[in-house]
Image (cartoon, rainbow, N blue to C red):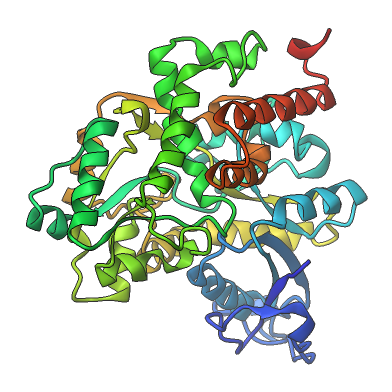
Length: 453
């Protein structure tokens, strides 16, 4: 198990590269006394306030923590003396490691986890393993939809990390579309025609990254909103154990079309080894034309290549199964304070710092893919391109990893099975059947009455 660690302390650059724990040198003790930023009161003028000599640990998946957050942690240390030891785990290993830590009672002070009103109960058991944060100063500022996905029995247990207002959609190079006379596709057939034209022009239609284990999964649960459109009430039936994934023709079609994209060369030759961290670079190069991304992707490309305008990246929903419903998801990576933390007060102080007006503004300004963090006190940087994208899809649906029980916890397993599908080792029916089997196992473990015999 590889874990990268960043311990943020006074004078430590937060933008340093992630280091393997085995290679990371321990920090030497430092003087933690000093004056505060405010003028001491008369009563305390004879003695400067003492900063706290505490280190709080924070474990999270590698894709969840941005450099800007690490920079804020460094500033937090400068102001309070409290160090933040970030333990960054590869995304494909994180879910199992987190569950091991929670089950053995050895979790970090703060742990990252995906929100979701079902999952935080059945997977993380937050009522036992996390602290109630409802009374914190920032709690009332959390967007109501995002807060609902972090709440159990009226108590808020988590703090959102990322922008959940954006959706996973196909980001495309507008200039190349214009040069090739292409229009935004609204059906799968139109999408294949676009891809064929791009291949004919000597470019690769879609940048896909299977090796990360998570990105290629997006095509299924995100476009599954179309299954609810075709079969109204499907989500409720799935949650009440009245039907299965394997019985649904729309979900079978989506998986069939995922494999077809790869087989037709729409993902190029290296999709099994590509990593999502290289997506912006490959789109900027012009070698690839499209990628599934959030609405901050244009800014990411522009940051990498200032000559590439952020507005040269447009967006449209993934049209598998002819989907034209905007796939919204109020869930996302979140911070939780472990109930067994010995540094709970310091951890709460850090979460409050990250949710302050100043920190939210800093994150929005310095993380390209953040447009509007889910807090009422966070600024917005939506462009006309992004506004146009949202206005194009008046119909919205909640993605299946959030709307349907016991889907999100098996995300990486779905990634393994969809990889097998791409390699011809599994059929769409087998992939869906495995999802159903795992859902039944999760429901049994959670003693879900809908699955009781």
